[in-house]
Length: 409
Image 1 (cartoon, helix red, strand yellow):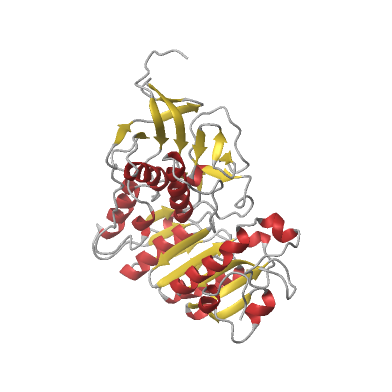
Image 2: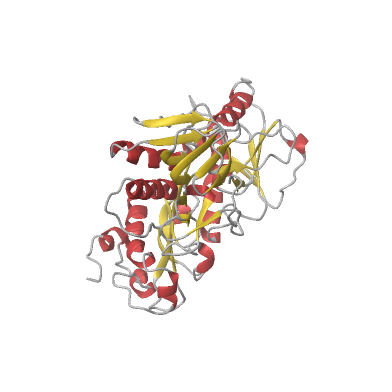
């Protein structure tokens, strides 16, 4: 390799200073290691808090500081290959180990002049367009069906604005169960959000301000490795793309190991888990040879708290066992590997009960650690919750999660 434009060779270069990349840097810093952290943004921030109370008294901004001992380079990485990161300014960073954690970029608004909130400037601009006008508040139109669209719409409704959420289908949250989608719709509707089903291309004149949360694209630098169908870098159970190159967070997709095929992996809990595990690996600590984590998501829509944990809804039997009253904002929907009594728990959707969500994650951990193939093959899975057990009148998620694996009272 030519040395023209090269800087001093580093042990570790981390491309991306979002939640995943910063987590790796923090672990390395605590272990006394050095690394180079590359990101084009002047001051990266945590993204989920930006929409938690977007139109509240103040925008929630949580900076992601550079840890001690980590060198920060403000530049765009345009190409990555084994042993080298090429920057837009012509410099080349040579490294023994490279971590790609470049995240997602929001799709632009299909309505001209519409706002997106995939960055601090975008969130601030939308907030100024709504809150900065004073009374009367403008009519807000929101495009999208996912968690982010719901958070934007609910925050505006809580402010007292007239807000309409234009869905692609009949219900929000298309990647979850229709039972959860219906419950979330009704709870937010009661708080003042007007839902417009099957209207992904509304009349622009029907609102004064538009916000779009219509999906995101993985951001992946030019590289010589093939991408998955979703446009992400394919990684193994050790999160490696090829020897010496790892990818984590929203730009990566496990295609081998316990998390392969589980879906729902592109979320902050996954990014932080991967960053923590990989940071320990690169620091030389004694850790499991494979990364594993129960995929999970959370969304705060005003007083409505929504959580999911486990395998993607599409791989589960669609008939749930219902605990509590999700429609009233306090309950859980349990989904299993099949319709039979001995089918095992694969997914839990929770509204309003954070401790019960955490209990579900603990219960799902021992099962999903074996992978979907083990479940399909009918292998013995100690500690697994069956449909018959969960349907019993006295079943208690939190109490069950405290029992040792393999023991059922």
